Length: 180
Image (tube, rainbow, N blue to C red; front, side, top):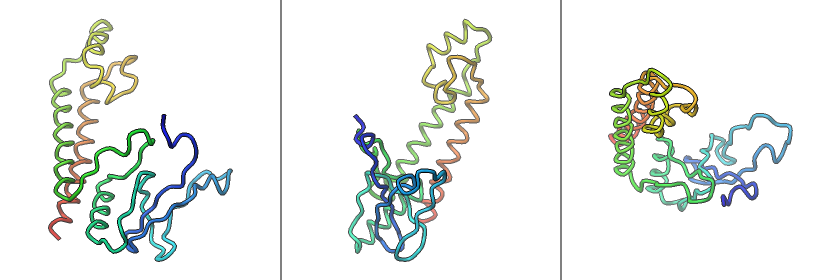
C-alpha cells in the first residue's frame, strides 16, 4: 500500500542558498478552486526553492559538502519523489556515482536504440501480434497503445534518441560543474 496515498503530506522544499528546508502546504489546501500552484520561494532569501519530494531528509545546515551533493542531484534531475511504497530508488552518494549512474542509463538507452534500428517492422496484423508477443516491453516503452496500433521503427528511434540526448545534457552539466 502506498503510504502517501492515505493522506496529503506537505511537500519538502530546499533552498540551496540558505541551506535550509521547509515543508509547504499544497495550494489546494489553501484555495480549493486554485488551478495552478505558485512556485515556492524561500522565506529567508526569497529565491526559488527546489521540490525535493516527500522522502527527502535534509543534511545539517553547516554540512556544505552534503548540500553541494544535494544540489548536484537536483541539477541532473534526481529527487526524492515516490509513492511511499519502496522509497525514491537509487540515489548516488557522490559526483562520481552520479556520473556512473547517468552513463549506465545512457548505455541502457543505447541498447534499446539498437533494438529499434534492427527491428523488422510488421507488415500485417498477424506479424504485428507476433511482434507484440515477442517485444511488448520495447513497444510499450515507446507507445502505450502498442497492442492496438503498429509502432514504427522511426518512432522508437526518435524516442530513444531524445532520451539519450536528455541524459547526455545532464552528464554535460555535472561534468562541467566538476571542472569548476
